[in-house]
Length: 219
Image 1: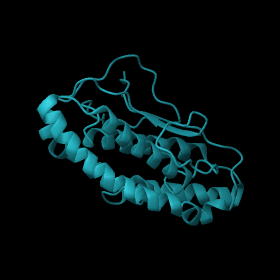
Image 2: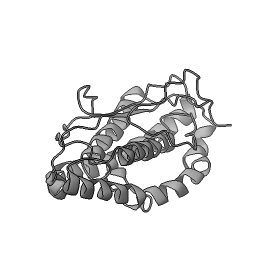
Image 3: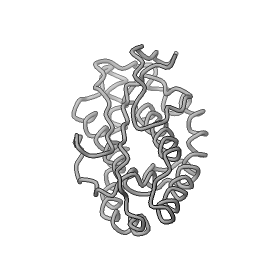
Image 4: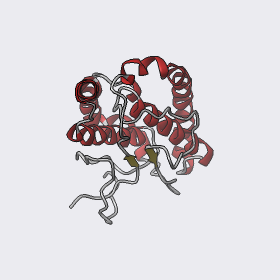
């Protein structure tokens, strides 16, 4: 039986979707791409500060945690709108905060304590097997909104299906949300936001699994 991961990615496929809007979403999303470049630079700097904070105190400073989870949340909304899913035509909001009525959401509860020892190895050594998988899913280690690889290819198939039939294939939607869920679980772990090791499991569909069991931290 699968366990529930603390990082919660949900998605709702909007219907109907425009047959042709996806062709210009690269242009429409350009302001978000510019902002996200700056946010990711800040994300890296914040993660370095958080690394030393966790190493010495065992805690991730709450404001820094809220900022970095907000960056991942913003990233997921843009990914879902653009070429990581094409699951909505609703323009993503410019905010780090959760937007309850937006069709793509991501959240991670604040951990009261993080391992001071794991912080030394989890972001490079323990996460290495996942990095190899992400290189395949994203076409290289890169930020998710610039998805290539399998995710980008599947999103392209979805766009072509929309243009030809006016419908988004349900199987592609389930697979894309599962793959993006995997990506963001790894991103949260590598960014030191959680000690819960990402499972080697593809949880497909727009909803998270509802298993009540608690996940186990990495050994």
